[in-house]
Length: 224
Image 1 (cartoon, rainbow, N blue to C red):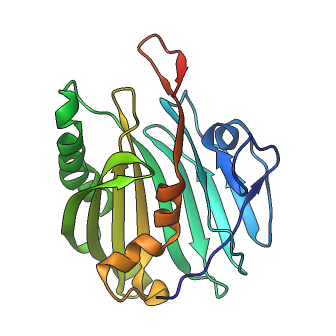
Image 2 (tube, rainbow, N blue to C red; image 1 turned 30 degrees about the vertical axis):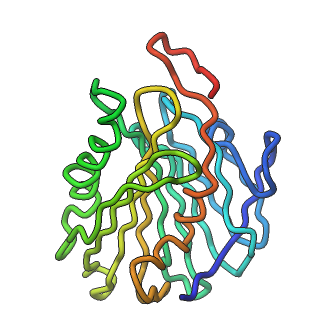
């Protein structure tokens, strides 16, 4: 499977692995430094984030154009990776998963139902032939999580097959979770099977993700 990669560097990094950055810094500022790519950033987010987290991107750099946008709650951030010819290879989005008051043992199954019955239909609304292909539990970055694999056809891009890989990750504390969703252009990424989808940008991000803090009922941020 052919994947192109990029690296990012923030103007000010917390103590973190190379090329990693904290979503608090992205949401707090509007400047990102380039590292071999043409990065754009549009700061439009309003309100306080219920979860703060850190992640890293693949270290191999290529001639990609990467657009980064902060979004309004419940979404956090959107990263768009364009290939050298300007085609959109993959979009990675982060969204807050507000879970109802359920027992701890039921949080993962409730997250799976939310992804299948709410997040995936919302993400593919207006698209052609949306379909859930697989739904399973797994461990991601040491946290209990659930993975949804789906697909749809993007007519506006010339009937392109788009794979959806959505990972719902539950932090060790707090009531809510995080959704990392990847929209993968099959014509560019050329996955040979569904397992290949985890090798893209979103898969790397999810595996590197570290939760930093969560907001309690009083509105205070509590470190993990």
